[in-house]
Image 1: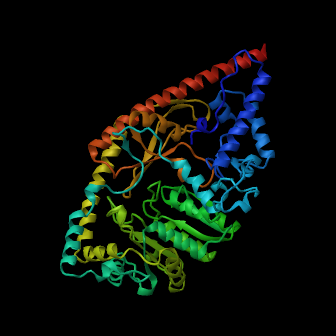
Image 2 (image 1 turned 90 degrees about the vertical axis):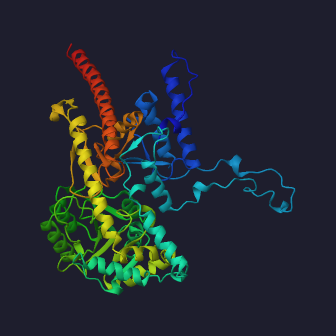
Length: 553
């Protein structure tokens, strides 16, 4: 969010104006600007405001002026501050009396002419639900920047590209079915639980992964995002505790927060979710659900070790907390053997809800996935599905069924695994060549040359990288966009304290040559960013030393 667009200050004061008068004038403008933004919906409830220091720096004014404005907004009940979290929009401003009163009405509804709302415009910002306000505030943090170049190279996102779409096969399958008049299943509603033949194919597919599934345990869904939503509908109430990996999948965070669940993040390391921290949380909190991605976690790329999988299942059973396993890219393995799903582990069948998708490996617009759950839970999930969208797209199910029956999906997986492995290797080589040599001089506890570091997974879609301590990937993104390259700032994926130094790079969306060019551009951005931060910190250090000298004298 560009706060210079939200808070607009006049420039009619001369540089020689009295500072107190100037402060009064600016403080009033800040209050008015933020009030207007809340009323118009630009700042929805739960939007985070900049700190006093951040806004003062942006506006080039004294921090006390911002503090005074925030105090008035707080006293008016519009914003509230939380220690350690920041300042947030609390409620909406009152509609001015002038907007409530209207002129005379000479039409058929003249009897309402004297109503205080006769000419009042609809204020939609007052109508949005708490869930909508929450999601809007979260989503606004990851809105794409404006003014990107046409040739911008993106390491953001995380979806397959057109070159890997099964276009010719799907076109042939549809043509053959229409030519034979075999279209009833394509154009009619499918059963709520999914097309019977597709369900058979998915059960066979999961059986090959050592996960036997009964028909009454399987539900076809419109992509894994709907799977998360249906599980939330069935299990999660307001203020329920949901334990989630930290960092985690952005849209899962959105879904749980829209339901006003209490999210508790558990750190992730190279072996996945840390079980020592999870056990500590479970001892202190009565949790309703644990959400995990055991294979090539988004965004870190970490895969949960076998020992931790067993610990997770043991803890979940001891504390009676169900697990939602999101196996969104479990098949995209580039080195070593593929681990079987968590639900395929002994003793997991009655405590793990498993979900998977065809979208990540095949094509994003397919929007087909599945949920596997105990029969008692599945009854509730089917009901939630019916209340959400009645049934899943029939045509997509029928076409995918034929594609699976012909064995084409297995061939496709082999093809994309080879291509994605080459792209991952190209990204790692380019990072080593162009990024590793760039250093940043740091002081204090992290004194010495610091670098951007990264972790290479053996599957999945993402490389997780980290800037030196106290540097912001969001700020680096501004430099990167000027060079024609983008990525996902890691702060979007955290549910606990802000950790601004992380960034996520997706490697499947561009070919090797484009990846190399993208990393070259990123290296230019990183060099400029490090240089500017060093320059600013050098000035701050100089002023600090001068201040110390003045005190000593």
